[in-house]
Length: 413
Ligand SMILES: [Fe+2]
Image (cartoon, rainbow, N blue to C red; front, side, top):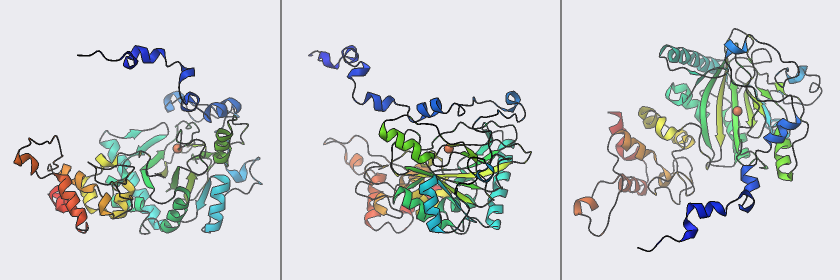
């Protein structure tokens, strides 16, 4: 047996890979814009995660980024033209571009708000009783809401039954992200008294920090009124542009304007640009503050919630084509193909050539037959095995009209 060439030896590779020899070393190890943002804005610092016992009751740290108020009350911001709640699409577009957020007034009606708020509070109590409550620095999160009530399935769809302003939200999000966007997650974030402020961050994080348009969008929909007293989200208006421009120009982030607390009535959908600096505020009241966090992003980005595994079979079986697409069950050439099914597809809702839900439902039913090792000596039985791929492709070629292969039926039994 011939010896392995020395160029492939890990020690040899390491000896030729000092930082200065590497490709793109500066770019892939950069923490900009956060490094210069923190260096040049010392009042913005990382708050160590502590619960109320150590944090103590609300104590203002004078001059800290979270020692702030709403835009209309803030000495720096009160005369600026910050976003106000509106249903006017032209104004909402201007607010998004200029400030990195906008407020869609009455996106949920009072009745819709109540349905969601009641379900969130019930679920939160149930998860506490079950001993599986997911505590955060701010309080409690309800994750994977899609499994926890029909209202949340409709919420992800932005269906007018639960989000009356859904069509307007979808238009604005599509303008920001381009067609084919998918959802990251739907989380109910409950903030309670004694929580710590969240460090300011960009949801888009290290994904294209220099991007000229958002790679992700987060729709924050309070289902309780929010303000500077009960933990309205901390944001720095306009930071979406300041940060991305600094990275593009290779310059440090300079002095930023101060943060404000978002204030909004329950049912207002606050659309935020993934590049906007923001963090959870501090609830100084004894009443829980609830915000629905619904992220969306480009279809090639990994989702926050792994819906491929986590969605309940019965939810999948009844899911609309739009809900399936938003959860990531529509493959396209560049993403999420399943055993090759989805190559050539565009990722759009209801497209049989990219539908992957049949595989998951087959797995749920214990009937998922994956294609394994085959060759010229394979037996007839091996070659004729009921591969799920074969069935999904046949279903798609037939138009993919019915529920995928009736597999949903099997899964529901
Ligand atoms: Fe965030």
